Amino acid sequence: MTSEQIKKEADALRETIVSDRQYLHAHAETGFDLHDTLAFVRKQLADMGYTPVDCGKAGLVALAGGKKPGKVFLLRSDMDALPIEEQSGEGFACPNGRMHACGHDMHSAMLLGAARLLKQHEDEIQGTVKLMFQPAEEIFEGSSDMIGAGLLKNPDVDAALMIHVMAGMPFAAGTVIVSPPGVSAPAADYFEIKVQGNGCHGSMPNTGVDPLNAAAHILIALQEIHARELAMNDRAVLTIGTMNAGTAANVIPDTVVMGGSLRTFDEETRAQIKQRMTEIAQGIAAAFRAEAEVVFGSGCPTLVNNAELAACAAAYVKELLGEGRAFSAAELSAMGGGQKSSGAAGSEDFAYVSQQVPSIMLALAAGQPEKGYRYPQHHPMVRFDEDALSAGSAVYAYTALRWLEEHK
Image (cartoon, rainbow, N blue to C red; front, side, top):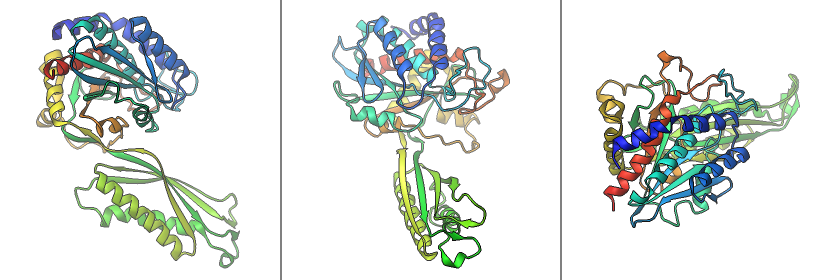
């Protein structure tokens, strides 16, 4: 097995990978409700000779190799879409009100392509490659659900890799950027703050307790956490995105419900902010004779990249794609491509895997703005360049094969 061989074989699979991607795109499903998606992925794996096994509510796992002793390398793709009405104009656009606007259809198709490559080289695998097809990434629940169902056991996983396609990148499709050691995706927490007052007529506010007034003060005060309680390098973003209350202009309502999200790059900072949010909300509500409850819902921890695995991955993708198509984050920064971004800090629930085993996240360029791929992820008009697909499949397969070869 050589890098040239894997690349050539991946290129030969291009039409199949594209076909898989377009089917998955046209049949987008969300969360754990992936009936058509699971059936398609399961059939493709079975037709290749795999024995896919259900894992958790809607996950699939398949094993490649295992004929020779060695370690276990996990390759992950996510399968879920978003509840977005598609406006991409693609001929295979999804008509059901859901859309693969984050590229998970690309990930699944690439991992299916990698599965085909690994099956062709199964006798050469120095250990086992575990293929992870995950639901519910967009709601940060699928990865932890699969881990709870035994994803990282039987056989025990030694290292893991994920790829995420990126639209609107100024690199040729199929270019790979290896994340630096440490945190590359922030922790995410969604929350709800319920402020309980006592409704009354708007002309007699003294007879009730106004929860809107209390909620307004809570909203402003929460921003002081970042301004006055965090150090300069404690990166965090706290957003209140919804505030709902009342149905009439002349009535003070009983309750206000605010919804928001928190992004942090450090677990201590995350815990500190969550504690202070509760203290501030309850304290201010009490000052206005109201009550407040803060409830944290779905979320995920920080995604941590292992230093040794990051170095290995950078070396492997350069062997495979060449120096001009593969970069470490440090190299990109030295070239002037690592300047401060517009602030994008998307979270990623592969973080749960990264908290358990050495892991690495790779970014795969899949659409240059100058070629018409100008819309960002999660936009109803976003499109992805399918020229990235065969490269993604090759990177999945080659990285696993090389890591197992070097860590016998």
